[in-house]
Amino acid sequence: MQELTHYIGGAHVKGTSGRFADVYNPATGEVQAKVPLANGDEMANAVEIAAKAQPAWAAVNPQRRARVMMAFVGLLNRDMEKLAEALSREHGKTIPDAKGDVIRGLEVVEYCIGAPELLKGDFTDSAGPGIDMYSMKQALGVTAGITPFNFPAMIPMWMFAPAIACGNAFILKPSERDPSVPLMLAELMEEAGLPKGILQVVNGDKEAVDAILYNDTIQSVGFVGSTPIAEYIYGTGCAQGKRVQCFGGAKNHMIIMPDADMEQAADALVGAGYGAAGERCMAISVAVAVGDETADRLLEKLVPKVEALKVGPYTSGNDVDYGPVVTAAAKANIGRLVQTGIDQGAKLVVDGRNFNLQGYEDGFFVGPHLFDNVTKDMDIYTTEIFGPVLSMMRAENYEEAIGLAMDHEYGNGTAIYTRDGDTARDFAARINIGMVGINVPIPVPLAYHTFGGWKKSMFGDLNQHGPDAFKFYTRTKTITSRWPSGIKEGGEFSIPLMD
Picture: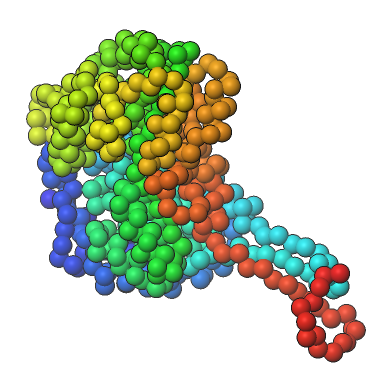
Protein backbone atom coordinates (compact mmCIF):
# COMPACT_ATOMS: atom_id res chain seq x y z
CA MET A 1 0.00 0.00 0.00
CA GLN A 2 1.23 3.48 -0.86
CA GLU A 3 2.49 5.54 2.07
CA LEU A 4 2.17 9.25 1.41
CA THR A 5 4.45 11.90 2.88
CA HIS A 6 4.72 15.49 3.99
CA TYR A 7 6.52 17.98 1.73
CA ILE A 8 9.01 19.96 3.82
CA GLY A 9 12.13 21.83 2.80
CA GLY A 10 11.71 20.93 -0.84
CA ALA A 11 11.53 17.17 -0.31
CA HIS A 12 9.06 14.41 0.44
CA VAL A 13 9.45 13.58 4.13
CA LYS A 14 8.05 10.52 5.86
CA GLY A 15 5.94 11.04 8.93
CA THR A 16 7.55 10.37 12.31
CA SER A 17 4.52 10.52 14.59
CA GLY A 18 3.57 6.91 13.98
CA ARG A 19 -0.01 7.95 13.29
CA PHE A 20 -1.70 7.51 9.91
CA ALA A 21 -5.11 7.97 8.29
CA ASP A 22 -6.57 5.84 5.53
CA VAL A 23 -7.08 7.39 2.11
CA TYR A 24 -9.98 5.74 0.28
CA ASN A 25 -11.05 5.34 -3.29
CA PRO A 26 -14.67 6.48 -2.77
CA ALA A 27 -15.86 4.63 -5.87
CA THR A 28 -14.74 1.23 -4.59
CA GLY A 29 -14.62 1.79 -0.85
CA GLU A 30 -11.07 0.42 -0.80
CA VAL A 31 -8.17 1.91 1.11
CA GLN A 32 -5.63 2.96 -1.50
CA ALA A 33 -3.02 4.76 0.62
CA LYS A 34 -2.21 5.94 4.09
CA VAL A 35 -1.23 9.48 4.96
CA PRO A 36 0.91 10.48 7.94
CA LEU A 37 -0.63 12.66 10.62
CA ALA A 38 1.90 15.18 11.90
CA ASN A 39 2.55 15.89 15.55
CA GLY A 40 3.56 19.22 17.04
CA ASP A 41 7.28 18.64 16.56
CA GLU A 42 6.87 17.91 12.86
CA MET A 43 4.81 21.06 12.39
CA ALA A 44 7.31 23.14 14.36
CA ASN A 45 10.12 21.86 12.14
CA ALA A 46 8.24 22.83 8.99
CA VAL A 47 7.52 26.29 10.39
CA GLU A 48 11.16 26.79 11.37
CA ILE A 49 12.33 25.93 7.84
CA ALA A 50 9.72 28.27 6.36
CA ALA A 51 10.75 31.10 8.68
CA LYS A 52 14.39 30.79 7.59
CA ALA A 53 13.48 30.80 3.89
CA GLN A 54 10.90 33.60 3.96
CA PRO A 55 13.04 36.78 4.34
CA ALA A 56 15.02 36.05 1.18
CA TRP A 57 11.81 35.36 -0.74
CA ALA A 58 10.22 38.59 0.50
CA ALA A 59 13.31 40.45 -0.74
CA VAL A 60 12.77 39.15 -4.29
CA ASN A 61 11.07 41.88 -6.27
CA PRO A 62 7.35 41.37 -7.01
CA GLN A 63 7.91 41.03 -10.75
CA ARG A 64 10.21 38.05 -10.27
CA ARG A 65 7.79 36.49 -7.81
CA ALA A 66 5.06 36.95 -10.43
CA ARG A 67 7.19 35.06 -12.95
CA VAL A 68 7.08 32.03 -10.67
CA MET A 69 3.28 32.25 -10.75
CA MET A 70 3.35 32.55 -14.52
CA ALA A 71 5.50 29.42 -14.83
CA PHE A 72 3.24 27.60 -12.36
CA VAL A 73 0.20 28.30 -14.57
CA GLY A 74 2.02 26.67 -17.48
CA LEU A 75 2.83 23.60 -15.41
CA LEU A 76 -0.76 23.29 -14.20
CA ASN A 77 -1.93 23.24 -17.81
CA ARG A 78 0.78 20.75 -18.74
CA ASP A 79 -0.21 18.35 -15.94
CA MET A 80 -3.97 18.96 -16.02
CA GLU A 81 -4.86 15.35 -16.87
CA LYS A 82 -2.57 13.94 -14.20
CA LEU A 83 -3.87 16.30 -11.53
CA ALA A 84 -7.51 15.63 -12.42
CA GLU A 85 -7.06 11.86 -12.33
CA ALA A 86 -5.35 11.96 -8.93
CA LEU A 87 -8.05 14.27 -7.59
CA SER A 88 -10.89 12.08 -8.86
CA ARG A 89 -9.28 8.92 -7.53
CA GLU A 90 -9.22 10.25 -3.95
CA HIS A 91 -12.24 12.56 -3.92
CA GLY A 92 -14.60 10.73 -6.28
CA LYS A 93 -15.73 13.66 -8.45
CA THR A 94 -15.90 13.27 -12.21
CA ILE A 95 -12.92 14.15 -14.41
CA PRO A 96 -14.58 17.28 -15.90
CA ASP A 97 -15.43 18.43 -12.37
CA ALA A 98 -11.89 17.69 -11.19
CA LYS A 99 -10.48 19.76 -14.04
CA GLY A 100 -12.81 22.57 -13.02
CA ASP A 101 -11.42 22.28 -9.48
CA VAL A 102 -7.89 22.82 -10.82
CA ILE A 103 -8.90 25.56 -13.27
CA ARG A 104 -10.71 27.70 -10.69
CA GLY A 105 -7.52 27.58 -8.61
CA LEU A 106 -5.40 28.32 -11.66
CA GLU A 107 -7.46 31.45 -12.33
CA VAL A 108 -6.48 32.83 -8.92
CA VAL A 109 -2.82 32.10 -9.71
CA GLU A 110 -3.27 34.07 -12.94
CA TYR A 111 -4.65 36.99 -10.93
CA CYS A 112 -1.58 36.82 -8.67
CA ILE A 113 0.67 37.41 -11.68
CA GLY A 114 -0.50 41.00 -11.20
CA ALA A 115 1.32 41.21 -7.85
CA PRO A 116 3.63 44.08 -8.94
CA GLU A 117 0.57 46.29 -9.46
CA LEU A 118 -1.41 44.95 -6.50
CA LEU A 119 1.46 45.50 -4.04
CA LYS A 120 2.14 49.12 -4.95
CA GLY A 121 1.90 51.55 -2.06
CA ASP A 122 0.73 55.18 -1.97
CA PHE A 123 2.89 58.31 -2.10
CA THR A 124 2.16 61.92 -1.21
CA ASP A 125 4.70 64.48 -2.28
CA SER A 126 5.10 67.53 -0.03
CA ALA A 127 2.58 66.45 2.57
CA GLY A 128 4.09 69.26 4.62
CA PRO A 129 7.10 71.58 4.35
CA GLY A 130 9.84 69.29 3.07
CA ILE A 131 7.84 66.25 4.13
CA ASP A 132 6.90 63.25 1.98
CA MET A 133 4.58 60.47 3.09
CA TYR A 134 4.34 56.98 1.59
CA SER A 135 3.11 53.49 2.42
CA MET A 136 4.47 49.99 1.89
CA LYS A 137 2.63 46.69 1.71
CA GLN A 138 4.90 44.16 3.37
CA ALA A 139 4.62 40.39 3.80
CA LEU A 140 3.43 38.99 7.13
CA GLY A 141 6.10 36.26 7.34
CA VAL A 142 4.98 32.65 7.77
CA THR A 143 1.29 32.06 6.99
CA ALA A 144 -0.86 28.92 7.05
CA GLY A 145 -3.97 27.42 5.51
CA ILE A 146 -6.24 24.55 6.54
CA THR A 147 -8.19 23.32 3.54
CA PRO A 148 -11.21 21.01 2.99
CA PHE A 149 -11.65 17.74 1.15
CA ASN A 150 -14.18 18.97 -1.40
CA PHE A 151 -11.79 21.19 -3.39
CA PRO A 152 -8.30 19.75 -2.85
CA ALA A 153 -6.77 21.82 -5.68
CA MET A 154 -8.82 25.03 -5.81
CA ILE A 155 -8.90 26.08 -2.15
CA PRO A 156 -5.17 25.49 -1.50
CA MET A 157 -4.35 27.64 -4.53
CA TRP A 158 -6.83 30.30 -3.41
CA MET A 159 -4.72 30.57 -0.24
CA PHE A 160 -1.09 29.88 -1.07
CA ALA A 161 -0.92 31.69 -4.42
CA PRO A 162 -1.68 35.20 -3.07
CA ALA A 163 0.22 34.52 0.17
CA ILE A 164 3.37 33.55 -1.70
CA ALA A 165 2.97 36.28 -4.33
CA CYS A 166 2.98 38.78 -1.45
CA GLY A 167 6.33 37.43 -0.23
CA ASN A 168 5.17 35.12 2.55
CA ALA A 169 6.03 31.50 3.25
CA PHE A 170 3.02 29.19 3.51
CA ILE A 171 2.24 26.08 5.55
CA LEU A 172 -0.55 24.05 3.93
CA LYS A 173 -2.48 21.56 6.05
CA PRO A 174 -4.75 19.86 3.48
CA SER A 175 -7.57 17.45 4.17
CA GLU A 176 -6.28 14.03 5.11
CA ARG A 177 -9.01 12.50 2.93
CA ASP A 178 -7.47 13.54 -0.41
CA PRO A 179 -3.89 14.76 0.16
CA SER A 180 -2.15 13.75 -3.08
CA VAL A 181 -2.99 16.78 -5.22
CA PRO A 182 -1.72 19.32 -2.63
CA LEU A 183 1.59 17.42 -2.57
CA MET A 184 1.71 17.55 -6.38
CA LEU A 185 1.02 21.30 -6.33
CA ALA A 186 3.98 21.89 -4.01
CA GLU A 187 6.25 20.00 -6.40
CA LEU A 188 5.00 22.06 -9.34
CA MET A 189 5.53 25.34 -7.48
CA GLU A 190 9.17 24.47 -6.93
CA GLU A 191 9.53 23.34 -10.54
CA ALA A 192 8.21 26.79 -11.45
CA GLY A 193 11.09 28.38 -9.52
CA LEU A 194 9.81 28.76 -5.96
CA PRO A 195 12.65 28.42 -3.43
CA LYS A 196 12.60 25.39 -1.18
CA GLY A 197 10.84 25.92 2.14
CA ILE A 198 8.43 28.61 0.97
CA LEU A 199 5.53 26.17 0.40
CA GLN A 200 5.36 23.32 2.92
CA VAL A 201 2.65 20.66 2.97
CA VAL A 202 2.12 19.10 6.39
CA ASN A 203 -0.60 16.47 6.59
CA GLY A 204 -2.50 15.95 9.79
CA ASP A 205 -5.63 16.14 11.89
CA LYS A 206 -6.61 18.28 14.90
CA GLU A 207 -3.18 17.89 16.46
CA ALA A 208 -1.62 19.54 13.40
CA VAL A 209 -4.32 22.24 13.38
CA ASP A 210 -3.63 23.10 17.02
CA ALA A 211 0.10 23.14 16.32
CA ILE A 212 -0.61 25.83 13.71
CA LEU A 213 -2.87 27.85 15.97
CA TYR A 214 -0.47 27.89 18.91
CA ASN A 215 2.74 28.48 16.93
CA ASP A 216 3.87 32.07 17.57
CA THR A 217 5.81 32.28 14.28
CA ILE A 218 2.70 31.76 12.15
CA GLN A 219 1.14 35.17 11.52
CA SER A 220 -2.11 34.29 9.75
CA VAL A 221 -4.42 31.33 9.28
CA GLY A 222 -7.03 30.65 6.60
CA PHE A 223 -9.65 27.92 6.90
CA VAL A 224 -12.49 26.48 4.84
CA GLY A 225 -14.78 23.81 6.30
CA SER A 226 -17.70 23.39 8.68
CA THR A 227 -19.00 26.25 10.82
CA PRO A 228 -18.26 24.65 14.24
CA ILE A 229 -14.61 24.15 13.29
CA ALA A 230 -14.48 27.61 11.66
CA GLU A 231 -15.66 29.13 14.95
CA TYR A 232 -13.02 27.16 16.88
CA ILE A 233 -10.17 28.14 14.57
CA TYR A 234 -11.26 31.77 14.39
CA GLY A 235 -11.65 32.13 18.15
CA THR A 236 -8.42 30.32 18.99
CA GLY A 237 -6.36 31.98 16.27
CA CYS A 238 -7.54 35.47 17.16
CA ALA A 239 -6.83 34.82 20.84
CA GLN A 240 -3.26 33.94 19.84
CA GLY A 241 -2.89 37.27 18.04
CA LYS A 242 -3.09 35.92 14.51
CA ARG A 243 -4.86 37.34 11.52
CA VAL A 244 -7.61 34.79 10.73
CA GLN A 245 -10.22 34.24 8.02
CA CYS A 246 -12.55 31.25 8.28
CA PHE A 247 -15.27 30.13 5.89
CA GLY A 248 -17.91 27.78 7.24
CA GLY A 249 -21.11 26.02 6.26
CA ALA A 250 -23.91 27.01 3.91
CA LYS A 251 -27.55 26.46 3.09
CA ASN A 252 -27.99 28.17 -0.25
CA HIS A 253 -31.51 29.11 -1.37
CA MET A 254 -32.65 29.60 -4.94
CA ILE A 255 -35.90 31.53 -5.31
CA ILE A 256 -38.02 30.79 -8.37
CA MET A 257 -40.50 33.51 -9.25
CA PRO A 258 -43.72 32.76 -11.21
CA ASP A 259 -42.35 34.58 -14.27
CA ALA A 260 -39.14 32.53 -14.41
CA ASP A 261 -38.27 30.27 -17.33
CA MET A 262 -39.07 26.90 -15.69
CA GLU A 263 -36.92 24.88 -18.07
CA GLN A 264 -33.95 27.09 -17.34
CA ALA A 265 -34.62 27.05 -13.61
CA ALA A 266 -34.92 23.26 -13.54
CA ASP A 267 -31.65 22.84 -15.43
CA ALA A 268 -29.96 25.23 -13.01
CA LEU A 269 -31.25 23.32 -9.98
CA VAL A 270 -30.07 19.98 -11.30
CA GLY A 271 -26.54 21.22 -11.93
CA ALA A 272 -26.26 23.33 -8.79
CA GLY A 273 -28.00 20.86 -6.49
CA TYR A 274 -26.48 17.57 -7.58
CA GLY A 275 -23.14 18.44 -9.18
CA ALA A 276 -20.17 17.01 -7.27
CA ALA A 277 -22.74 14.92 -5.32
CA GLY A 278 -23.79 18.12 -3.53
CA GLU A 279 -20.40 18.38 -1.80
CA ARG A 280 -19.98 22.08 -2.54
CA CYS A 281 -20.30 25.01 -0.16
CA MET A 282 -22.02 26.86 -3.02
CA ALA A 283 -24.43 24.05 -3.91
CA ILE A 284 -28.10 24.97 -4.08
CA SER A 285 -29.78 22.80 -1.47
CA VAL A 286 -33.08 24.70 -1.12
CA ALA A 287 -35.42 25.67 -3.96
CA VAL A 288 -38.08 28.18 -2.90
CA ALA A 289 -40.97 28.34 -5.36
CA VAL A 290 -43.19 31.40 -5.07
CA GLY A 291 -46.75 30.07 -5.25
CA ASP A 292 -48.10 26.52 -5.51
CA GLU A 293 -48.61 26.87 -9.25
CA THR A 294 -44.95 27.80 -9.69
CA ALA A 295 -43.90 24.82 -7.56
CA ASP A 296 -46.04 22.41 -9.55
CA ARG A 297 -44.76 23.73 -12.89
CA LEU A 298 -41.18 23.52 -11.66
CA LEU A 299 -41.58 19.98 -10.35
CA GLU A 300 -43.01 18.90 -13.67
CA LYS A 301 -39.76 19.95 -15.32
CA LEU A 302 -37.44 19.01 -12.47
CA VAL A 303 -38.47 15.46 -11.53
CA PRO A 304 -37.60 13.77 -14.83
CA LYS A 305 -34.24 15.55 -14.93
CA VAL A 306 -33.38 14.36 -11.42
CA GLU A 307 -34.51 10.82 -12.18
CA ALA A 308 -32.33 10.79 -15.30
CA LEU A 309 -29.11 11.71 -13.49
CA LYS A 310 -26.27 9.30 -14.20
CA VAL A 311 -24.30 8.38 -11.10
CA GLY A 312 -21.05 6.48 -11.41
CA PRO A 313 -17.27 6.37 -10.98
CA TYR A 314 -15.02 8.85 -12.75
CA THR A 315 -13.61 5.99 -14.81
CA SER A 316 -16.99 5.62 -16.60
CA GLY A 317 -16.35 8.65 -18.80
CA ASN A 318 -17.42 12.25 -19.10
CA ASP A 319 -21.15 11.54 -19.37
CA VAL A 320 -21.35 10.69 -15.63
CA ASP A 321 -23.18 13.50 -13.82
CA TYR A 322 -21.71 12.92 -10.39
CA GLY A 323 -19.72 10.36 -8.45
CA PRO A 324 -19.65 9.03 -4.88
CA VAL A 325 -19.48 11.08 -1.70
CA VAL A 326 -16.12 11.14 0.02
CA THR A 327 -16.51 8.61 2.86
CA ALA A 328 -18.79 5.90 4.20
CA ALA A 329 -19.54 8.18 7.17
CA ALA A 330 -20.71 10.94 4.82
CA LYS A 331 -22.97 8.47 3.01
CA ALA A 332 -24.47 7.28 6.30
CA ASN A 333 -25.08 10.84 7.50
CA ILE A 334 -26.92 11.71 4.28
CA GLY A 335 -29.08 8.62 4.66
CA ARG A 336 -29.89 9.55 8.24
CA LEU A 337 -30.93 13.08 7.29
CA VAL A 338 -33.09 11.82 4.41
CA GLN A 339 -34.94 9.53 6.82
CA THR A 340 -35.35 12.45 9.22
CA GLY A 341 -36.95 14.46 6.44
CA ILE A 342 -39.45 11.67 5.79
CA ASP A 343 -40.18 11.26 9.50
CA GLN A 344 -40.78 14.99 9.92
CA GLY A 345 -43.35 15.12 7.12
CA ALA A 346 -41.54 16.19 3.94
CA LYS A 347 -42.63 14.50 0.72
CA LEU A 348 -39.88 12.47 -0.94
CA VAL A 349 -40.64 12.99 -4.64
CA VAL A 350 -37.46 11.32 -5.95
CA ASP A 351 -36.23 8.52 -3.71
CA GLY A 352 -32.56 7.59 -4.10
CA ARG A 353 -32.32 5.44 -1.00
CA ASN A 354 -32.18 2.16 -2.88
CA PHE A 355 -29.59 3.29 -5.39
CA ASN A 356 -27.11 0.52 -6.13
CA LEU A 357 -24.33 0.51 -8.72
CA GLN A 358 -23.44 -2.93 -10.01
CA GLY A 359 -19.78 -3.70 -9.51
CA TYR A 360 -19.39 -0.85 -7.02
CA GLU A 361 -21.52 -2.09 -4.17
CA ASP A 362 -18.87 -1.09 -1.60
CA GLY A 363 -18.48 2.42 -3.00
CA PHE A 364 -19.87 5.52 -1.33
CA PHE A 365 -22.52 6.28 -3.92
CA VAL A 366 -25.74 8.07 -2.98
CA GLY A 367 -28.70 8.30 -5.34
CA PRO A 368 -30.36 11.67 -6.02
CA HIS A 369 -33.12 12.77 -3.64
CA LEU A 370 -35.76 15.45 -4.12
CA PHE A 371 -38.06 16.60 -1.34
CA ASP A 372 -41.21 18.73 -1.63
CA ASN A 373 -43.24 20.50 1.07
CA VAL A 374 -40.20 21.11 3.24
CA THR A 375 -40.73 23.51 6.14
CA LYS A 376 -38.22 25.61 8.02
CA ASP A 377 -38.44 23.60 11.24
CA MET A 378 -37.23 20.38 9.57
CA ASP A 379 -33.67 19.10 10.05
CA ILE A 380 -33.15 18.79 6.30
CA TYR A 381 -33.71 22.56 6.10
CA THR A 382 -31.70 23.73 9.09
CA THR A 383 -28.74 21.38 8.55
CA GLU A 384 -26.15 21.44 5.78
CA ILE A 385 -26.54 17.94 4.28
CA PHE A 386 -23.56 18.08 1.87
CA GLY A 387 -25.04 15.46 -0.40
CA PRO A 388 -27.25 15.00 -3.48
CA VAL A 389 -30.43 16.14 -1.72
CA LEU A 390 -32.56 19.07 -2.91
CA SER A 391 -35.37 20.45 -0.75
CA MET A 392 -38.34 22.25 -2.32
CA MET A 393 -40.17 24.85 -0.24
CA ARG A 394 -43.36 26.68 -1.17
CA ALA A 395 -43.74 30.36 -0.34
CA GLU A 396 -46.96 32.30 -0.75
CA ASN A 397 -45.22 35.40 -2.07
CA TYR A 398 -41.86 37.03 -2.74
CA GLU A 399 -41.62 38.52 0.76
CA GLU A 400 -41.99 35.12 2.39
CA ALA A 401 -39.43 33.63 0.00
CA ILE A 402 -36.76 36.25 0.59
CA GLY A 403 -37.46 36.06 4.32
CA LEU A 404 -36.57 32.36 4.38
CA ALA A 405 -33.10 33.05 2.97
CA MET A 406 -32.58 36.11 5.14
CA ASP A 407 -33.62 34.38 8.37
CA HIS A 408 -31.37 31.32 7.90
CA GLU A 409 -28.22 31.28 10.03
CA TYR A 410 -26.02 30.70 6.98
CA GLY A 411 -25.39 33.34 4.34
CA ASN A 412 -22.91 31.98 1.82
CA GLY A 413 -24.69 32.15 -1.55
CA THR A 414 -28.16 32.58 -3.00
CA ALA A 415 -29.89 33.00 -6.34
CA ILE A 416 -33.15 34.20 -7.85
CA TYR A 417 -34.70 33.21 -11.16
CA THR A 418 -36.97 35.86 -12.62
CA ARG A 419 -37.60 37.90 -15.77
CA ASP A 420 -38.48 41.00 -13.75
CA GLY A 421 -35.70 43.56 -13.31
CA ASP A 422 -37.34 45.34 -10.36
CA THR A 423 -37.57 42.09 -8.41
CA ALA A 424 -33.99 41.18 -9.23
CA ARG A 425 -32.66 44.58 -8.14
CA ASP A 426 -34.66 44.50 -4.92
CA PHE A 427 -33.38 41.00 -4.15
CA ALA A 428 -29.75 41.96 -4.78
CA ALA A 429 -30.04 45.08 -2.61
CA ARG A 430 -31.87 43.58 0.37
CA ILE A 431 -30.56 40.04 0.74
CA ASN A 432 -28.13 39.57 3.66
CA ILE A 433 -25.98 37.00 1.89
CA GLY A 434 -22.47 37.41 0.55
CA MET A 435 -22.72 36.06 -3.01
CA VAL A 436 -25.85 36.57 -5.09
CA GLY A 437 -26.86 35.12 -8.46
CA ILE A 438 -29.51 36.62 -10.72
CA ASN A 439 -30.47 33.86 -13.12
CA VAL A 440 -27.10 32.33 -12.18
CA PRO A 441 -27.37 29.30 -9.87
CA ILE A 442 -23.83 29.12 -8.42
CA PRO A 443 -22.61 32.72 -8.18
CA VAL A 444 -18.94 32.01 -7.43
CA PRO A 445 -17.08 35.24 -8.23
CA LEU A 446 -14.20 35.18 -10.68
CA ALA A 447 -10.64 35.48 -9.40
CA TYR A 448 -10.43 39.28 -9.67
CA HIS A 449 -13.48 39.72 -7.40
CA THR A 450 -13.67 38.28 -3.89
CA PHE A 451 -15.34 35.17 -2.45
CA GLY A 452 -17.04 35.22 0.94
CA GLY A 453 -20.31 34.66 2.73
CA TRP A 454 -22.09 36.46 5.55
CA LYS A 455 -23.54 35.43 8.90
CA LYS A 456 -22.32 32.03 10.13
CA SER A 457 -20.78 31.23 6.77
CA MET A 458 -17.78 33.49 7.37
CA PHE A 459 -15.66 34.65 10.29
CA GLY A 460 -13.26 37.48 9.63
CA ASP A 461 -13.02 40.81 7.87
CA LEU A 462 -11.63 39.99 4.42
CA ASN A 463 -12.80 37.61 1.70
CA GLN A 464 -10.80 35.06 -0.26
CA HIS A 465 -8.94 35.89 -3.48
CA GLY A 466 -9.24 39.10 -5.46
CA PRO A 467 -8.03 42.37 -3.88
CA ASP A 468 -8.93 41.19 -0.37
CA ALA A 469 -6.33 38.40 -0.54
CA PHE A 470 -3.52 40.90 -1.03
CA LYS A 471 -4.80 42.89 1.95
CA PHE A 472 -5.04 39.77 4.10
CA TYR A 473 -1.49 38.60 3.37
CA THR A 474 0.24 41.96 3.82
CA ARG A 475 0.66 44.65 6.47
CA THR A 476 0.66 48.32 5.59
CA LYS A 477 3.51 50.44 6.88
CA THR A 478 3.31 54.23 6.51
CA ILE A 479 6.48 56.33 6.43
CA THR A 480 6.73 60.07 7.03
CA SER A 481 10.03 61.39 5.67
CA ARG A 482 11.66 64.77 6.05
CA TRP A 483 15.04 65.79 4.66
CA PRO A 484 16.31 69.07 6.17
CA SER A 485 16.86 71.73 3.55
CA GLY A 486 19.38 73.73 5.53
CA ILE A 487 16.99 75.56 7.85
CA LYS A 488 17.64 74.46 11.40
CA GLU A 489 15.02 74.95 14.04
CA GLY A 490 14.77 73.96 17.65
CA GLY A 491 12.84 71.01 19.01
CA GLU A 492 9.06 70.87 18.65
CA PHE A 493 6.90 69.95 21.63
CA SER A 494 3.50 69.69 19.99
CA ILE A 495 2.11 67.54 17.21
CA PRO A 496 3.16 69.21 13.94
CA LEU A 497 0.32 70.37 11.72
CA MET A 498 0.41 70.03 7.96
CA ASP A 499 -0.32 73.65 7.01
